[in-house]
Length: 465
Length: 111
Image (spheres, each protein chain N blue to C red):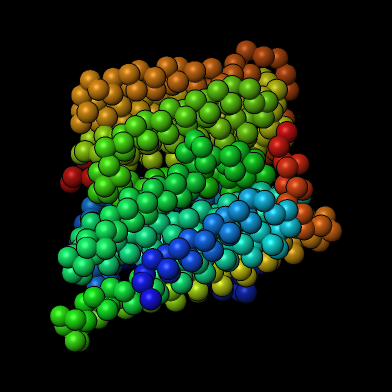
């Protein structure tokens, strides 16, 4: 409960801070302090030291999984604000508002990690998305940003409509909004009318709309355009924290309700996983712009995260936490460097290693982590995902795991193209000014990735404490 | 009136909304179609709410079963209003830059 209340309050604080000061550095520092407060508040809640005691009538339930995910999301946002905060305040005329919107989106993330009724799922998704529509369009004079925000907005509304119809049909079948399938009202009457079809139909609609939100394959088409058009700083936020939160919401619901989809549920899921991996990886290979490549790679990573649904056991809930941490840190780092580049194409990175050896080295670690090379966090993240699927389904899914590993090999190609450009090509990589603080932040993140990669229990022990 | 009529009416409205979103080119019309989808959901929620209440009230006169769906409808209305305010702002922003509200314009993002 701490995270929800504090993030909403801090959002308001950020809005008022723009009245008091115009200084962008001060605003950034206020935001970083606010994120620290938020992180501490959430940790106090996790370790049951103190939390606001508000009776939500069982609409929200705070378990360790959700609280721990909150910590990861807030810590990633903190890293994001430290690294790219000075770029966030450059976008648009009113710097404090961007941070206020980020805080409001975090409020939605906190709701999504703890919802216990479908009403809260709907509210969480909306509270998280509406600020993002604005952030996407925050570069008002830029046509691409306008297009991206309109497209994101229309797609978001459309999928929300589908989600709501799904929730309504589920309600019609069961008479309540619980995420577990409990029939509260007289079952006899409901069954006598034979509304058995309503529940699976509703679940399929919810499934489709969640696939929209996490950009899984047949419903991914908006992702590259939106991620490409949005200002890079906000793409970084959208592609990491928001996406991971979407997955947490997805998994929280469907780890309980997957069986209700019927015997074909595993076929549906494996089709979507393969399609997502295929589209994400193959299209990423042909991109010329690093930013667009990262958009497709985020689709490909979503394919791996979907394995958590397939596994649906202890290993998969550990895995999804590890995955969201590893993926968020690496992607935030890559985007932070991308923002500093003048040219977003692969050629823009030519010769970066000679000019900025430290930045290039950190970027290499992040890219290796995304590709899933051992000794980086990304390796264990992928390992946990595939292992969880094998653990609960045995050899029946061996073929799916092999396909996933093959696609991971494909992904190495386009991640290594960036490394190749940085180290082995001649050129003058033009960057904006890179401060030593920024470099220090990058090094800390690279060390974090390697630490988690050597020993994932470094992160996961916190989960069990 | 049997609940089937409500289900059919709502699903019909919902489908009109979906087709409108997919087919129409004017952003304002697309936007109205999304609203149509949301209102179809509202209608169906209220109908289900009355149905479940009617079933439960036979056994228990003071039951509150079904009220949660009507509450949900209010939340949908509030969220839809918030979405409208953001969405119209985005449309106005786009109109200022391009002097058009045509969705075909979105295809320029694709390389």
